[in-house]
Image (cartoon, rainbow, N blue to C red; front, side, top):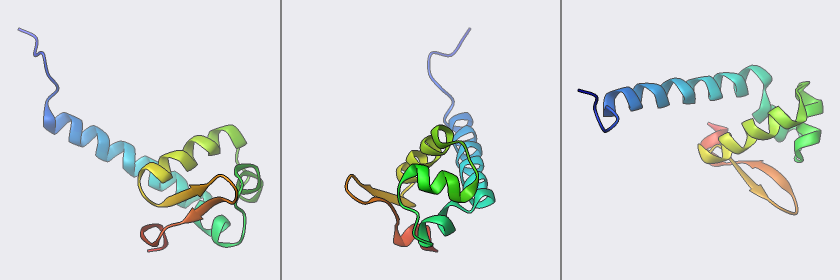
Length: 85
């Protein structure tokens, strides 16, 4: 019989994998460094790291969700204390 709910362990493993891939991609592109170097808007950050602006925009929003970045409509993305570690 099929289960009606998700297995919590499978969900945890899946989320852990996704978070790891998000962090690995951000580290490989050096997104945090680009922001600390002064790039704030998605298109500036994309140019700085050599990434597609639309794809990078998705990555930036995931990093906000993880608490590593914050965004302000008037000033773009900023690194949080958690993201600076």
